[in-house]
Image (cartoon, rainbow, N blue to C red; front, side, top):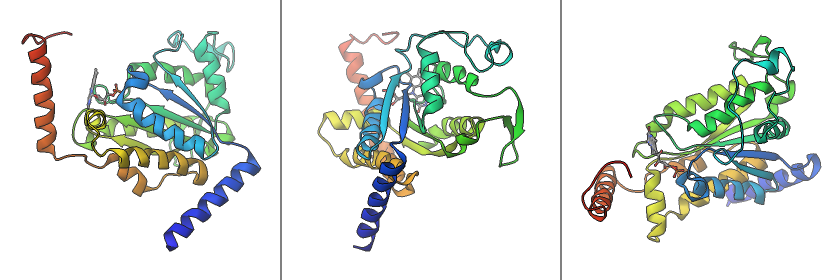
Length: 269
Ligand SMILES: Cc1cc2nc3c(=O)[nH]c(=O)nc-3n(C[C@H](O)[C@H](O)[C@H](O)COP(=O)(O)O)c2cc1C
């Protein structure tokens, strides 16, 4: 009862703060090649719905649909055009909006242990938002000079992976934390969904995944209303949906069925 009352109080205070200081602007970059139809997209959609319900202005961009040049890596944005990218494409416009956003939500399935190349390509272009000059951050580590406003801004990771164990996310979480440090932003936490394929499979079968999706929604709500996400909510997102043994059996029998459909021919699809 007490917790329920406290929760309602936090929501009321959060709504009042949003009304006074204006809506939180969130730019979400969906770095899954499967976009809306993917496992990561399913989690991201619920997270952003929760954030929007709490009053945030939400923009979702698909990294793989963005018409953009890769970073030219010669850094003319530092040495020639001073903070302006030489390309005038959809990614430059996105960088302008990211510079104004209160939060970046970076969504990526784990690919070869880390971020997808689609999301990496976009984030390489974010170097134009940094100064070439160096400074020492509050944690004593060197980084490029960032805007003083950046410290109030948040970065969130949303990810799914194929393996059963959630340690598959460790390199990606470390990479995202490092990126938030480079941009002088706060790493607000990560929504991690291990055995991500099981989530979609179980949803299609009508099996109980609503608690996971509801927790993703709640996490979006919490970010906007309180500026952070509780460990309890994030733990619900990453909770095991089945035993490791059942997972292995499910995946292997699904593979057997696919193989049977393709006449026993494994190989490139
Ligand atoms: C090229 C490729 C590499 C992958 N590498 C990993 C990996 O290193 N670790 C892992 O747990 N899952 C890996 N996966 C599985 C995906 O992370 C997983 O299926 C995820 O839920 C897919 O999300 P999506 O539907 O949004 O694409 C990989 C998938 C692909 C296509």
